[in-house]
Image (cartoon, rainbow, N blue to C red; front, side, top):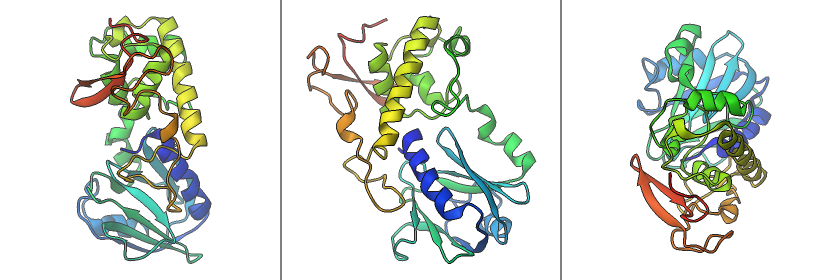
Length: 276
């Protein structure tokens, strides 16, 4: 699933193509892609004729502000990606927008876990956006704030990072990578993390996300994530634990282990990340 770095890279491409432009022709062809509005037609109607004021991001959500105060919100889901002026006949293209300068923007999503929605102010308040924690890269909490957010939580820290409530933007890949760099076992109850633990985790998260963004994100072997220009992200070779089960830890040479935490595959070094 695309995570914060992949969405940030996508945001930058979309900002270059959309900022200040007007939606002229909009077509949404799959009802699941429009599931957060009443119908695909409602999304189309709300977008046509609207000018883009800003192209933002919170966690893994794109937030595109329109000139009438509404917000176009998009999530890539498990397999979604955006294309700018790409081929028109790509399978699973469920959203197409023609802008007033002739640019064509498409959302391609084979598994249809992603979505495109247009929210007014009331919609935003009742949507899932309101439960997101601070952005893990653009606006992270400080260590004391994160420790407070985790206080009393007995769930494993890996699960809490994926929950998006304490901090928003991490998914399976970067949660594993950040916990490894912070030397925190993924099964450690969130409430047991000290302020110092949280300080290490935040520093590790910043480093992991910075490196991934610099590399254009992580494209796995399934090529589910591609940049809007069709290129693959190059961060795969920088991963220290994710997808490396049985390989030696770069720090201590112990074999990387894989467990399942709340139905999610989790990779860690059993020596560097001592069990709770």
